[in-house]
Amino acid sequence: MLGQKCTVCKNQADKKCTCGVLYCSKKCQNKDWGTHKKICKVLRSEEGKIAKSIHYGRNSLIESVRSMQLSEDDKVNMVRNFGDYVDYDIGTPAASSAKTAKK
Image (cartoon, rainbow, N blue to C red; front, side, top):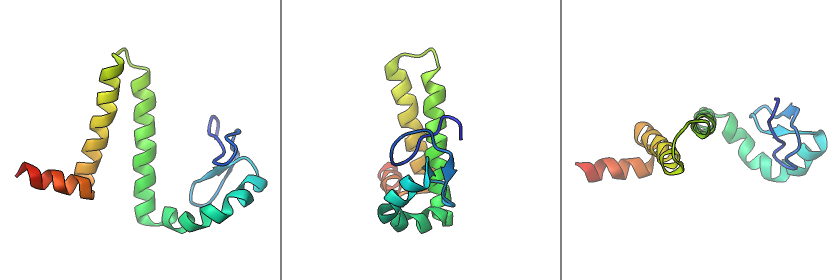
């Protein structure tokens, strides 16, 4: 988990909940439990796994785009277009209305 940060304190994380949320210690995990227990089961569901994949894919894209020799405006547009594409492709409510509007 090199380079990944604790959800609570932002220190180097070396522990992971079964749902994928990162912590640096049992103390931070316990501190977060009141909030985390509400989303833990959802994150472990199929929908949660898809959402995490999209989130991590977007973060990977952002890191890749940052290293490109492009203007800041081009970088922002590239990431924004990725988000629009994912919304359209998976059929989120925002994308559904966009599909309807295009017809």
